[in-house]
Length: 266
Image 1 (tube, rainbow, N blue to C red):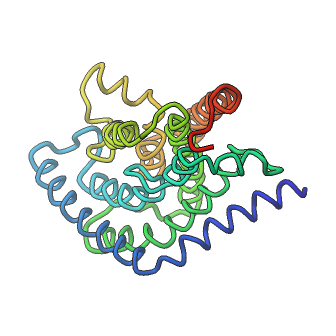
Image 2 (cartoon, one colour; image 1 turned 180 degrees about the vertical axis):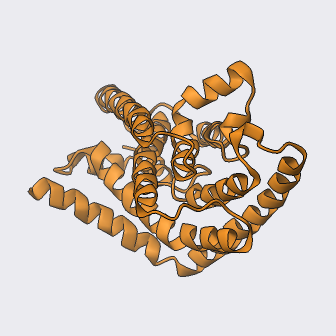
């Protein structure tokens, strides 16, 4: 029970920390709304030429755009999660302090990232989504059950996203500068999560491969649950499988790193 309270306190601290950046949050809301508008008009033109592309009608495609803008910062698909701070602490040697804490390193940063993600969803994601579905014709479910199913899929997406970014952060144990790894992770994340285009529009083997990768758990999976295009329980199983696999791999890499690698700067 004490351990659970500890990680809840860490998550609450992560929420409060990001809540203090009010100007940055307002700027982020504006940015997400502008990019959403650009993508919406692009999608509208594309779906005008290719109705029901990827199995979506035009209203579903519009909704997909605004779900993506709501989850972009929430899931740190383009960066901005706790991995930046964690990599800096590894580089400077301050990670030694984290390792001496009476708490698990992986779970500590997971709790902090979940707190950050919940704030970004509420503070930066709700307004662009609400604006988009009010201004444009959208396919928004009217039943509470679908929204609850969607939010649970988003929660699992947060864990999967953290699992990917925790592995990226741990690369700093071996690299003097992890900037290249971070940038590669951003590029792969944007392409394979469906942030640029829904993964169900990708043809043939390429589409099958990207839908099987963990990044599809971030945006495509929750969006399909919201749009009624996926079975929630099958989606949860897929996301949970990747979450467990990534966290297990992260734990293995953490053990190897902390036992065999000299902390830079320490």
